[in-house]
Image (tube, rainbow, N blue to C red):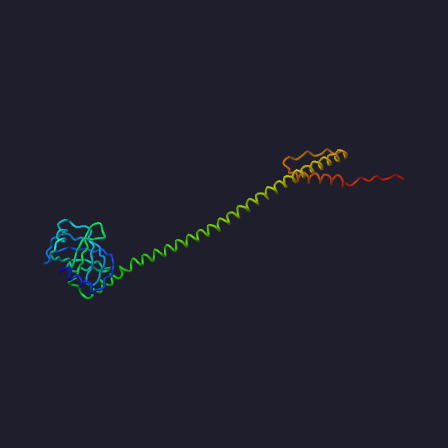
Amino acid sequence: MAMAERPDLRRHIRIPSILPVDFQLRGAEGERFDPEIRTAFTRDLSEGGLRLEITTLPDVVAARLRGKEPLTIEVDIALPRRTLRIPGRVAWRGPAADTRAGWIVGVQFTEVSAADAAAITEYARQAARRPMIVKTVLAAMAVLLVAGGLVYWWNTGILSHRIETTRQALVKSEQEVAQVSDSLGDRQLEIGWLATQVRELADVLDEREGRVPPPAEPGKSPAQELARGIERLRASILKPQATTKEHP
């Protein structure tokens, strides 16, 4: 009988959707033989019913499900803004062939308003689109990550090139500074030697003129010593000579 009534569920478009729902199995007259509210997941959902995947059940409840007696069920479907409690009947049931354990139960709603049916259909459609949206978002994120990686690689390459160019310029500058320092050192030596020669020549002129050469001034640079020696030479060479008058 249950198998003969199974095609009634096909009158409504089934939308594949995996949603958590709470349920309670009952007897044919609505009597409760399972006091617990249990949770399972839908495999598809429509305004006329759903297919429920139940993974675990107590032995007592599972025994009733394995039997041939008619069963009813109450299902709570949590919509975004409200929860619908819908009564139904177990149209068919059987062990799940594609899972390790559990049951697949076909439920046909027995009392559902037009507004609730429309809400269930819209909710099922949104749930069916959600995996596609997630896949699209993940694909977009993957593209962004790849693009970001390429940009990072490109920028890193440019930055590395700039760093290497700057390093080479610094090395070249250090070499030029070293060359200039060596050249300045050579010039300092030349100026020091020239300052010594000028000072000695000025001392000779002072002694010839009967003057005592001034003592060396410590702390003077070779250039200052040279300038001082040149001033002494100028004073000695350009000194006005005394003129003598001839007597008649």
